[in-house]
Image (cartoon, rainbow, N blue to C red; front, side, top):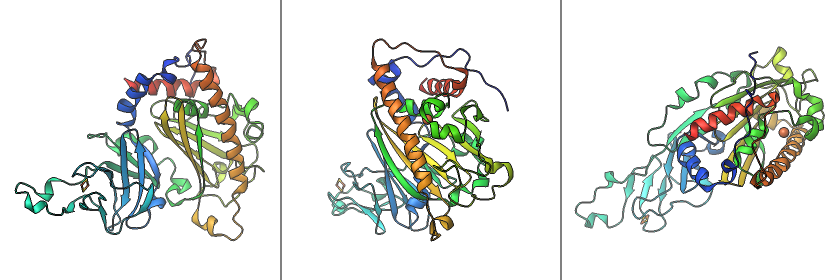
Length: 365
Ligand code: FES
Ligand SMILES: [Fe+2]
């Protein structure tokens, strides 16, 4: 395993956590340019199903059309700009109709109905399709990119593309979801996830299952960071009992059954792979000091369908651990907002935060 040091790195300056200017720069340079995790394909499995993805001024309709193709369009009518849909999820009955003057679009975005516009001589429906957004699917995860010229998804995700095939991630379904709203900057959530230096003090239960020194990293620079962490209980999992609560995923076997894998996926996804389930955190940046975290517990559909399926031990474990992490993130935000805050030195155990900060600053330009 390659070793990495924190290179005497220090925490980011105060302005990165409180300034509106930094926030706006993040919007342009990071969130309007990178591939963003939206949700799971299983959430829009049915033809016509959609989910909205909201980011600052933008609202994106992510849908599955009646040919089964995933598509994404700006939620903006081409007549007078009105939002087409308001509900966060739903099913389109074959078309998308604006509630204002009833302009109607196919799910692939073509304008097919524009009442009385034939009275306008120069008007041509073909000139007014919905504005589409780049969409990609990886391991059952849906991503969008708001840039007009996105970097190809396959190129960006090359380091991850076949990395998790053993978990059969694509087939997993959401068994449970908890949404958290916390008064802390989004970067504090990534930074907190990127080290286990805090585990002995903050997570006594987690630290018994995976003592903090068991952490290792196999992706150490760039937009994806993290690696495996060995569990103390052979064939165990990260649950209240330390035991698996479902059969091993995919074709996991041998030593893979003794590890949990933790990865940060820049800029809005945390991916935690356990032998029996996968945890995903979608990080929604809402304001300099406000973040929403959508946390999903994914299991194999066969496990979910079993009459004795009981994920409560995994849910309780991560809900407890999440709350512990959010509590310190909240306190960090408060302290960093103080004029007394100065960048502090990272421990060697925090080398992945130093790497994350570098990637962040690079992206910010
Ligand atoms: S604004 Fe949508 S039809 Fe007029
Ligand atoms: Fe933690």
